[in-house]
Length: 188
Image (cartoon, rainbow, N blue to C red; front, side, top):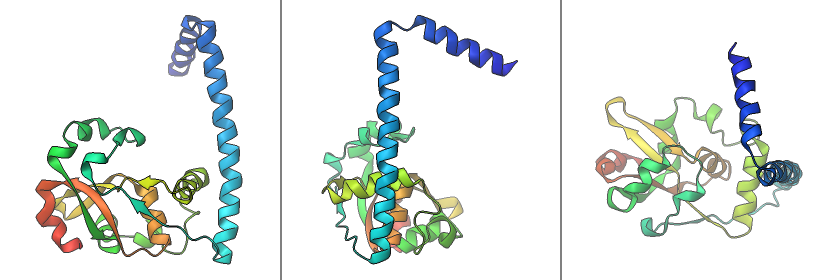
């Protein structure tokens, strides 16, 4: 019954679309498929380079909270953060391993230092590496300490964290609410 309702909704949406909207929909879908194929090929190339040790990435981070453009991120919670980013949030350099240990009790499973591609979608990692190779400026991961449980939730940036750990970075910038400054002191 639920499946029939979904199909009905899809048909009704399709019937309400103009011919231009339908054309755009199929063009976007085709472009997305091409991009995915391209990134899968890039992922294979990056894997080969990593095995040879010939992939040298230079991570460039935006560390000015006033220059952060959260529209680049795909997290649903970003809308709430956007409203008060410059007023309520701060960027601090923290020890990556210390943060990861607060995120998960099993860092070598969730953010392994020696296996990047096994736990991640290849095309996402390839897109991230390509962005870095082209000199793109990264938005620091957004974290939210849960003080009463002594843990950290990653709001956005799991793949950036995974890539940084794989590349053996010791410290990276993180975005979090100013009210958690004391909690993060132990993470430096």
